[in-house]
Length: 332
Image (cartoon, rainbow, N blue to C red; front, side, top):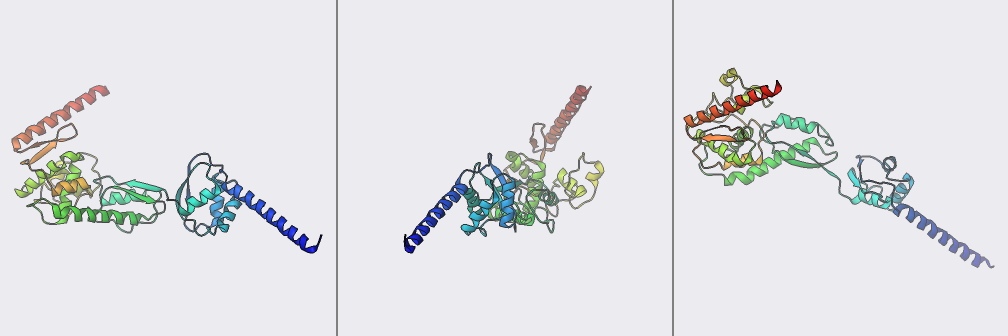
């Protein structure tokens, strides 16, 4: 055999061996992986390829970390792996896992902010929300946050979520304020949010919020005191729950928020109202009602005249007394 033929034969053998090795490697990285159930994995910011491969192996997603590292290097994808939380499907191959970390959508988490919380309570809730990071540098002004469900990715800043809540509040007001009912007894957005916060604390029943709003609007028009218990509580606790009935001394206490003592609206909101309460403040029901009290059925009884209201209050007190008697009888 001539030297040229030997060279060609060796070259052909190398090509075959390379092809076989390549085929074996492709089979290794494209075959189903060992993961048997869906699993969320967290790729932290700043984590290198080696650390990511080790984490994937530790969580049972890879048979060996080397194949993952080699694949990422060969595809020049080692710098494309993104930080975030990802859902990996069962039996995902090395190629599929790498593709998910490069191009897949990060898992979205959510935090639901209940309506009627104070700004301090919302900050506390965000501070306890798993997956958010960073400190909140200040407690926003009362009534400037819009309670909703907010979606976020693992590692998002708490301050960023708070800014989104402030922006959502401004956007909602920009939409609703120009279309408000005519001749309302207030002229600023702050006053509208202040009234909405009182409505929010008075009722969680969305259907009757416009009626509650009409009571307060009618009282403002007649220069009557609003006489709202939640405003008294805010003046006592600053937005925290009172945890007991209001005392007579607290009803008589002079605070800027005690609407049994002051006329008109308090100086600023007493909570962060939801969209339904804001809409009710800007579009109250057309009614002559001046009073309301709980009806014992999850709603309120409304009245135009004081004697009607007194009858509703007496009915409510009898219901409370009957419930207390019934409870004491059962406990014996």
